Image (cartoon, rainbow over all chains, first blue to last red; front, side):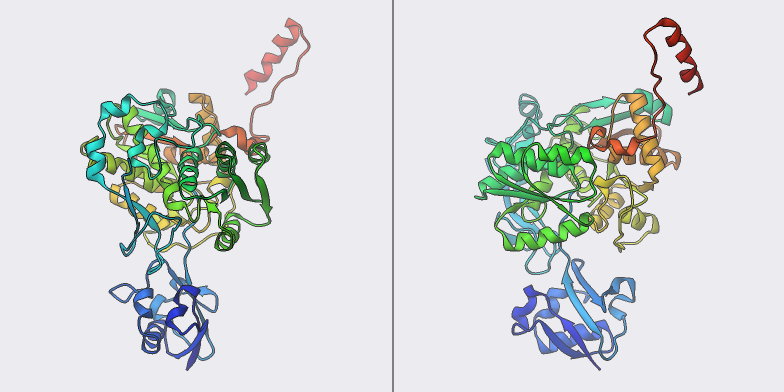
Length: 93
Length: 411
């Protein structure tokens, strides 16, 4: 079940500069493992030691934040589009 | 004397040199200034600080910029006022108002911008910029002028007229963006990636944010070198609240305070309350919101420091709550009519939340409590349109005056 994953600029040195990669996975956790298999080193950038997504890494499935679905257990299906977006700290007060 | 050592990622701890950088390259966490506290401890005493000029730079050892030559308009060391009338009304024995309307551009943003502009010059920038809900735009425009820098200021197009004029007068390149603050901020992130400017709340944010600590330092010194039992702080991104707490802990760490036990509580407007909502629902996950409130200076729907603000509230034993637009207006009027201080809408949020937290028993009546008023009401007069009592207009004679007294009797 291939899903399309959009890679943010700071991580493209790990994907041979590809902005977009296809992986087979049935959920987000599986996608993260599949990414690591194909592009070693990418998972530790995205996940902490316990394998949870880092706090300032946002993952969107078809534009909805997975934290408001089942987080890492969110199911994926053929043709889904997953974007990985580093949160940018800004704001004022 | 430099006491800052490095920029350090709050998440993974990776360290970076002290440059214009704000995000960890490794894990994308926010960077924060790390200090040599042993060096600070050796350099400061209460007496030494007390002898210095009454500005926030009296705490220069705790700030990440050249405190000997700051870009300053004499910001900080604003009045801490014993609010006996309001305290009696709410049933708090010892209530204080930290009145940060009394800053050069009339909000606490002068503190953060003084640090940011000083640091930006040190780093060699010639242009200072920001995304702002108004107060920050005023401060960047003024301090940029004082520093002789070029200044670009980006604001949402729906801001209060007073805040727009109070930027324009300093002749910045002011750009109104059709969108809310979060959209302005996103645009500025893109601009910051392309232009080599110092954006106070983006690439020099780690330095800028440290300026807020002085609101914690001053309160402790003004209370006679003691930490308050409880503080109530307005929250937008959540940064200010975390810095007030950090300041008290730093004073403790460097021997100027003992046994800091302050409970830190946060205030938001119901129409933009992602942090208070997460607190009230007991989660660590923020759902970004589209703001809809008269408290425009707090209208940040995607709070950058929300997670840390929540941690601070929990760690310190504080609370958070949110109030309606009607309660905000009541809060402004209550503070003005009891204490003679005219706060902006954010101050209305703070006072209304203070009242709510007392009513809910979250603030105990015997706690020494400080409420932070971070900006003046003169900039947000729209909020009070039609909300104040009528003014009689009379002929210049005694009978007319006496007839007009009926107006006041009714009110």
